[in-house]
Amino acid sequence: MSESNIQAEPRTEFGKGAARRIRRADKVPAVLYGHGGDPVHITLPGHDTMLALKHGGANALLTITVDGKEQLALPKQVQRDPIKGFLEHLDLLIVRRGEKVTVDVPVHLTGEPQPDALVVTETSSVSVEAEATHIPEWIEVSIEGLTVGDAVYAKDLKVPSGSTVLADEDLLIVNVTHAPTAEELEEELAEAEAEAGIEREEHEEEAVEGLEGETADEAEGAEGETAEGESTDSE
Image (cartoon, rainbow, N blue to C red; front, side):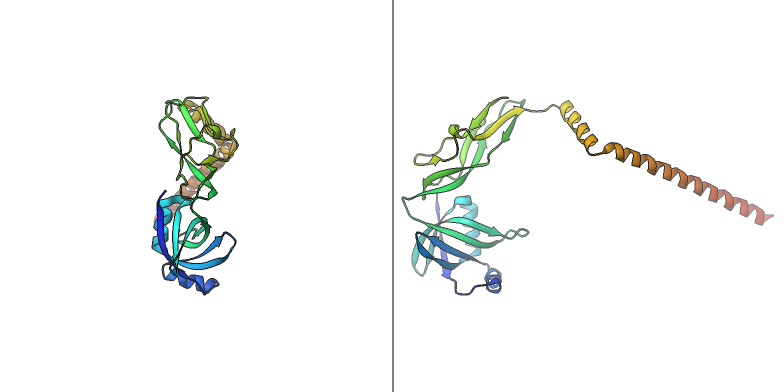
């Protein structure tokens, strides 16, 4: 995995107001901690940090330089704005070269199953122990040619040398089931509509049609009265 170098600044202002001012300057408040030292509060450049996380993924390895001192770190918690998506705050775990860390690594499917097979990802990421500077970006799982009834378990996962899957070996990762036909989908849809109360809605539609009919009769009657009134006036 590649490393991203980020120049950080010490942070001396705290609180919501200070955090807002930092973000307005396109920077991100963050904290470095780990290995028994006191937490170090820093400010990161927003654009560079966003690119580093985008390139390295959830387990991006960052080289943080503060006052000329470098620290290797992994993102432990990333807070983003729920609407706009910009970075709000980062918790960074200090790591050292050669040490083992435990992280969650995403599962990445490759290949195509048999035409009648439906692939269901039961577990999207697994816990892995790896050397801090050699964390796999993802675990590749081939579904090429899989057919109905096939399955992939944690014990089947292949990880790089030096990494170990910590999940239970019988943890189901991928399950291959029968892909429903158009007729089966239609039946399921009909059942779902019935459970959702479609019959009640049909009664409501009949009521609306009846109301429309009454409205039409009233309108016709009103036209008749108008016509009769005009005839009387003309006489």
